[in-house]
Amino acid sequence: MPILLAIAGVAAACVACAVVLLTSYRRVGPGEALLLEKAGGPTRVRFGSGLVLPMVQRGEVLDLSVRKVVVERRGKQGLSCRDGIRVDVRGTFLVKVEREEGAVLRVAREVGCARANRPEEVQALLEERFACGLANAASTFNFDELLADRSLFIDHVMMEVGDELLGFKLERMSLGRLEQTPLDQLDPTNVVDAQGILKLAERTTRLALETSGQLRQQREVDQVPWEAPRREDAAELEGEVERVLADRARGN
Image (cartoon, rainbow, N blue to C red; front, side, top):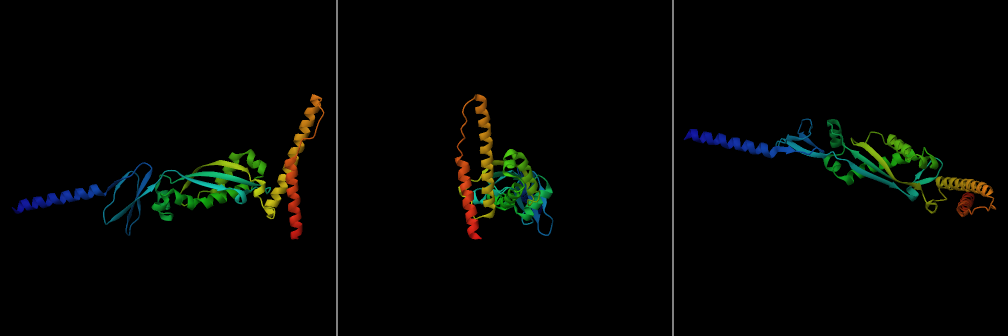
């Protein structure tokens, strides 16, 4: 009888251990990492699966998939180019946590798995950093240069953003919007906007004169009497410039 009781006890213990092992086994997907935290010990990272022992360890899962952070600046919040012209921009940044232990541990330490797994939290954490990168990069280009080479602008933005992203890595950036801020959304009393208005007036007048010269040459070739093209846009901008100068004069 004692032998039977001993055998039953051993069998029960084995079953209990098997149940504990089965319930402690955690498997994560290819786009996830498992962090094992033990009081007083270092945090370990597992890719694939691992054992999380009850009352001894705590397991957390970190999502390694790509997240999207969208930054949009329009109107008075538009970016100022080197020549003072303001532009509306919408940039999309794709970030992720690399599948390597150092990156996973840094994100877990500085952000936390729960926050890093929520897209809205990642947006809030990184939006201002990306907005600063956009603004700094735009300030090194004239407006015409910005429109002429969007890929060069993207390269400058990515250099401005750098690698210090709380453990996240910037995979790619794209531009969905890059255009001149409408004139009626500029503030003539703002020094930067006033400079931009002047530059727009100069630019529009130059383009009108170039177009006028080309039309005149074509008319002469076709032997058709030449008439000066209408320039309402240039006149509107020149009127805005005069108002800006008048406002600044009154301020002095």
